[in-house]
Image (cartoon, rainbow, N blue to C red):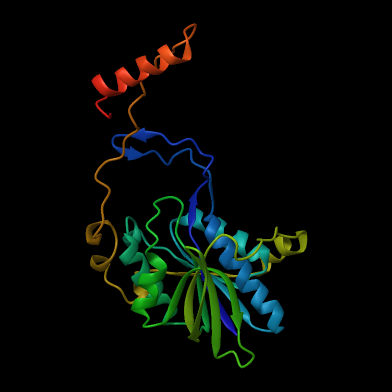
Length: 263
């Protein structure tokens, strides 16, 4: 069984965000694998281990530094990696990203595609579903459990819904987006880290994917960030002390009604 995991490199959520000229300053940010993609990688590895055969391929789109994300996934146990890299891809929105991934996936065999449910940087939560639509595949989002049938032709995906859980049966190949709770991601072993040196990361650009630079990138984006800004500073609150609770309550009620106008 061939399993493909789409991964993304995102800023570490502990990074301090700075705004420069209306844009996020990315110069000093630390980057990691998107946390939801870690669940996707782990599930792919678990399925391969359960079946006793198969291949796990990672694919990402991004600049040169995105290779670190692929290497991290290879150290966990993935077999192969594909890096979509081209200056023409810079600034691609979720649709263009899905289009590029679809073009890449048309060149390889797969039975299951995993994506994280969303990237924690821009929180679009669109790429996985758009990718499934472009590939004309069934898809189930935000799954917390996946059971593959013995004949490997069907799968039952479980996801949490309000008040309970939902089980969705689908034929394979299919695409699934991973949610927290699907599994517990592993740490890389020393053996896995050393094995990365023997694994090849394939690079594909616009020419290899057969796409025109006009179809992707910043100029073709259907979604654009107009401006980024830090939230305004909060004014200091008023502190009431040394008075009876009833008197304090009356003052607070007066302020809420006369000044804040919310009562």
